[in-house]
Image (cartoon, rainbow, N blue to C red):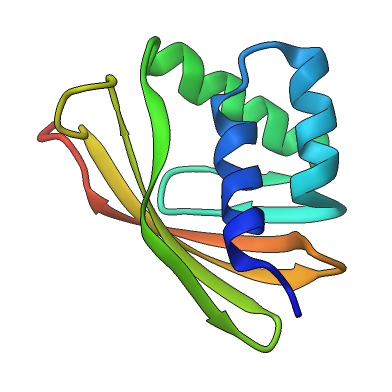
Length: 120
């Protein structure tokens, strides 16, 4: 049986890792090589594409951290989990829910939904 908590924690850890060398190892744990990511504002393919997305988010939201919101759930080869993004100890600025396809204990594809975004 796939451990949904581990999959979600690996995903969050990869998005929080600022060091490129350590992040590469986390990408290997969290995602298949041919991973695909899509949300309403960005998309990426493969580990290089995901790493570029993470770099962009970390630059735009410097000092913010992702955290899991609630418990992941899923069935068959699917996982759904929610997350927060913000400074530690404060209310989250952005919240979302991601739905993924799991292959060999890692995420093969992720579709992200933004549940809370700051006013533009």
